[in-house]
Image (spheres, helix red, strand yellow):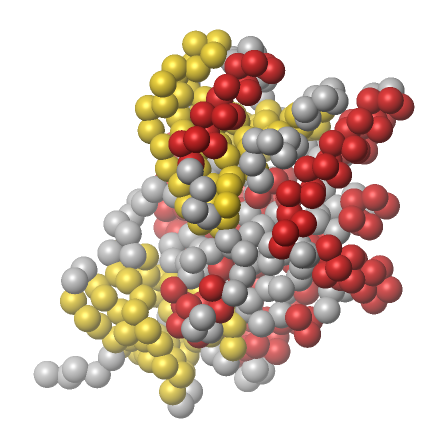
Length: 406
């Protein structure tokens, strides 16, 4: 019996949207590609599901019309609504109109299947070793150890990536982490406009506080420091919504939470892998403003796939190709956090300054003051000099420093 490991062109770890975008490029190019997912598919994914206009266009152009079964109700989102402790709220519509409200359990599975990739679920990544001409990967497939030999490996397994942990032992302990959690409430009364994703610039509520309608219930979410009490933080937000916005909710029916590798896109400290191992999506650090990561995941995943195709057919070093082409996505993502770009350009797909100009001068000043106060929450991470340094480098050189990437 032949016990040698199966050989493929590419192994993708994680059945995510970035994996689907990557797989689409690889399969279309004729490369034998396998995608593994540790959970049973279709699997649950913690996510607001609010997609950006860029992400919407990508799905339509690469995977076709979006079926109703991959959407939550309401099926679309018009934009974002910003709320402040003592300034007027601002509603900001997305450029080009409403975007889909994705049900990630179904949308990720739909995109993966549309890519044409071979999928192995209930299969976990264990370890890898770069060998001559490829990468030898140990897996646990439905309780049994297996090996697979791939010419290239793409990590698309999210912020707590096991592949990143294997390639860079100890790295994940050196970066800031915070927790996000959300609870689902029956609605007694909720004046918040269901067309919008609502976000609070309120330092007393937490690092990241949001709410929106989903499938007849109201999500209330909060981001907080690792080690703090989620239930206490959540109760504080619910009380505030009742007091400030006259929101009355029933008891929470369900709750969920996860860790986030927050900060990498703010300070241009992305992780793109080494050798024949590429890292993409949120595993690489892509996270847009308002914590929308889906569009960056789709585009960076496609770029990873294109880099492998170029390496396969033109013999170029895959890291060299990937890092050259990923610059465009780095610019788009980091620009959204760049204070100079926010002040003098339009890095977002919703026009904040246009909405701000609708207010009187006094209210404008209060909004800006509230945003500045909120930003002070992150002072303990000591990112200020790095953010400003990268902002000025972007202004002078037209790009971010690739030397900072890992």
